[in-house]
Amino acid sequence: MAGVKPVKAGWYNAFRPWTLHGAVVPVLIGGALAYHHQAFGALEWVLLVLVLIGGILLQSASNLLNTYGDFSKGTDTVENETRSPELVTGVLKPKHVLLAGMFCLLATCVIGLVFIWHVGWGIVIYGLLGVAGAGMYTIGPAYKYYGLGQPSVFLMMGLLMPLGTYYVLTGDIFSWEVLLISLPNAFMITGVLTGNETRDYHEDKKAGVGTLCGHLSYGSSLRLYLFMNLVSYPILLALMAAGVAPWGCALAFVALYNAWGLIKNSRKAPTDPHASFMLVPMAFRHNWHFGVLLVLGYIISYYLIPVI
Image (cartoon, rainbow, N blue to C red; front, side):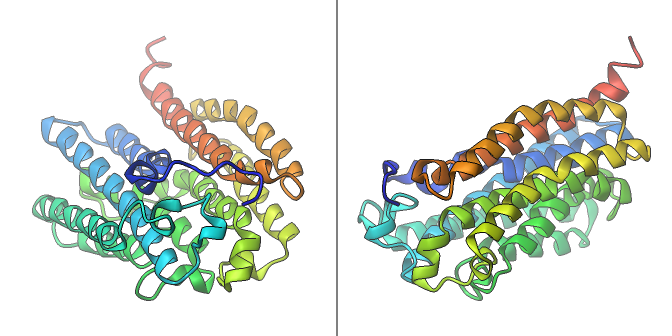
């Protein structure tokens, strides 16, 4: 991407730890609701840590295998190395990146055996969907290239991850409350991927990558990015008004400060390469702050405000 300084190629960039909001925030949502509905003993805390590790491993696997898949399909080239330079510059070997991603998936499956022992075989449904979503984004069926990236992120990370966390900790395979309170964050996580596809819009068009945003005009892609990042606020307000989410969750509205910066940056993105590049990190930051504040507000509502 012209005008943007390339990132430093290496394992740190390949793992992309700054993207872990996609795993951490959904697990925290499911964990907070489970904690409210069921007393935690030592076992539940250990299980929560294991779920968090499993989610981080899935996100890491997705990042690594996406790097491998885009390179093997010719999407990542020396002309656009600013976004993922590890393989196109030869700093890392494709085989090593692939093996690292597969190891993350395998480690997740091993952790899943503990969950099967604890709550039964029903958790396999969540586990298989999670592994398939992380492992087949750009390899195998490579559903990213069929415009299915956003629906997958919304469903698997936004909804199934908090539901799966709640299931492991409580034994309840489904909860409408968890599903509904997860919705604002599900849209925002999906907005991060939309920012990624909008940033890469012109390069993906040249490479013939059929992302969802690639099927839209650039302007429509940018509007979708803003919608996914901003619709979380009216949804959360509606959930609080309906009594589904406690009013303490209004703490998440502090993240509107990040949302305003995101809006201002998006206005520059069509003509400013740096602003276009910043679509993604600004969405990361927005999601981190919104998600953590949402969980903190939920906990404060039930465990601090009553005491005061």
